[in-house]
Image (cartoon, helix red, strand yellow):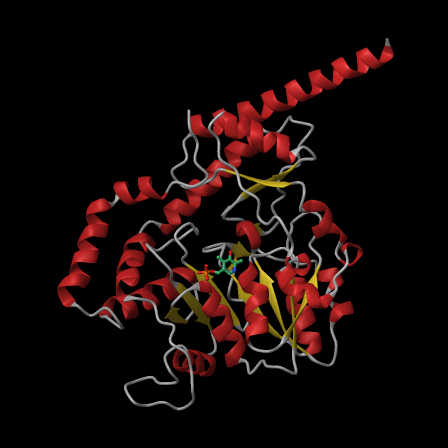
Length: 382
Ligand SMILES: *Cc1c(COP(=O)(O)O)cnc(C)c1O
């Protein structure tokens, strides 16, 4: 049996006619930029996510950059974010000229540790970017309280957490701005690059909409220099099809996670991910921890099972941020976990059999490992 890490083809084939029709309609219209599907997508995604304003942009990285620029963040400023995330979260802070300050992760939930934020706040700090990593909402209540106390903007990087909720409210509704990615393998994925920004603030909405499109809301109405980052009409048409099934796929991911929790429950050698109370995790990734990651990954690969690491190196230890001189002792949890985390296959279409197969191979690996260790011990005893 083969279990891929993600399976984009099955989802396409299940709804092929709808996708093909949507694509053909755009080809017929030739409205490749700012076609009617883009507006329709913005309305549908805002509605589904429970926020009033949506701006469809080129990708999830631009979404963060546009958010930061629209909050007037620049060279004199510092922005606080989390050590373990995809590069975009840190990189976009640098693109504005500001300095990223990285915070360690929570030992249980792997998101920004709110107890370690305040010690990094200075007079230059302007904003916090909280990331809902792996599909799990960050500690929004605590983070929001810190933002209010210190008068900081809050951006929620929701690239991995479409349709997750926290205390019964949609993620993205806690901060000033929420950013999303529709990279093909995200929980809602386009057939190429695409992103979106949600906000409840209509002034920010207009500013961001302008910034994403050369500073203009209509032709030749350039109020300030912006960038060119718009969602293609084709991607909007494809995503409109996907939005019809997004809630169903969310439930399928949550079901798959439940199966993993049940089938891996009795294994002593691994730590299963912990879901925060009062929140709905949407399992973009199912990340376990083990001290024998490399051997486990090799064993699973031999059995036809693909796994991943998200991420092999926390941002503060990447060459890209070398100038910051971050030490392992500054971010001990992120530093420790980077060699233990491993992501198991998860996608809405994954079958019960596939999950059972993965879990059986994980169990057999640890059985084999412990009997090897037994053997070594009895050999040494002699
Ligand atoms: C994917 C991702 C992004 C960036 O999205 P792109 O659409 O690939 O630019 C940003 N932040 C996080 C946490 C992501 O996972």
